[in-house]
Length: 457
Image (spheres, helix red, strand yellow):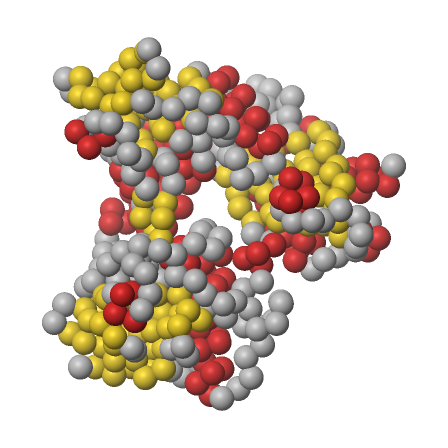
């Protein structure tokens, strides 16, 4: 048995942050990882997916300028992806862990009782806290025949060596949209089957503009359409959609994710395996010792939000160990308040969809009196960015307080506008004061002035 102040299960970006913040406070930390240090985001999700998207997107953007011709080699796109994922070699990230003084323990970690974690034949005892940072796993839909064919999840989609001639995509969330566009531009004929609409958690204009762009690039986007059955068809896969059969070479199941909590020993401490681990805003899940951060909590399942929770939990652990007050009041040092009202996210399609806070519908459901301002992004900065620039901006204002509760941008190169919106939402900046935040000319940020003018009119 080895004793540490803190034991963190899961060495993805979220677990690394929790371990780092606890260790910076002078606590001894063991970091447990069953796969690769750096986790899902580094090797199978955020990083490789954006690498696959970036080159085709840059070429498409260049072509929107007069006099520019541009091409790309798909093989070089996959090679660049491999560079960013180090071909699965996590040695550099493992070296970082060791260089900090954190102890890396390889193997599957599971609770076997209070403050106790087993990793293979080794037992780790936490004097103060165990932190669960085990992430999430794909949801596999119960479609007849799906277990009799090979399928892609997000891991297979981001680690493929080449684009299949025909790709089926089931699902219209972020993974489905991004991978449909990436592979269409890399050479696949893509068919998307989506039960409702694209990107249902953002303002409707986001999904509508992405659907238009995908269709313009030859993607067969079928909204309000489910997949009835799947069957082998030689080396291909036959998809039954109503009375129609569609053959594809690979099928991506982009049907969501769930907390990875089925086999981490939750039952040994009275919690339910397979469920989201409920936490308070400081990350505390049970008693004064069990914390959880990131996707395993089911709260704001995004890498950057998990890292935010981890920073807060690490600081809260350190404060409690030292006997210092824990400020878990809204927006306090030890409260993950943004999880509830100010979650930012970028969908890296072309057009990009960047949003933070509540949609107008979500704000009204929460009982807020809101006014929605929606307008085209048509400013000098956007005109210079691309010929025929087409974009949309939406802001949702709480009229009782005259502050922003949600902002959405859709268009080329809008991702870098998002943090300004996030600051405005988190800071609850009064619109009267926001009026004095003058956007630089000529940038796409000029849209902020147009939004405020529209609200005043």
